[in-house]
Image (cartoon, rainbow, N blue to C red):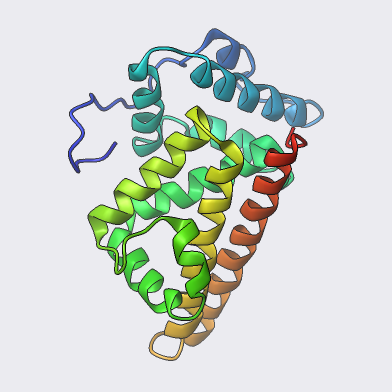
Length: 208
């Protein structure tokens, strides 16, 4: 995925993974049909990876997330409701991307937040205390799990991470730019709540 131990090739603006995904993405989506396109492309990507027996396909999705190869899809998913499949995958994609680009910052916020909401630490799956490499590995595992294992659990784990980091961000507001940190904490908490709710919908079979 990133430079931390993966030997998989890195792709920039690659060909789509599956024809069904490619067919769902026109050059400039009509707003009237963008919702259907978001849902169809999210389901096509998720199903395509989940039913693939080739581990290289899974690794390629992770590599795409690291190299902005999912940018077009993420843009299509960004307007979807939080408790829909494309909306949940967009939030997971954004959280994963931030963790890869700002690992040290996430570690600092996570460590501060884990003291406030210790009950979520076990669900997040981070070592205590995590380092940057642990953050990268765990977020990779969560993203991988969303496509190959238990989507509901993966989303709830991501929700736990976002919630812990939100509390840590609020705690650090006293040390940094308070207004800016407070806004960040609110956004992260909202993301955590959205991912947790989406995870519950996925477990109930109602995440579409």
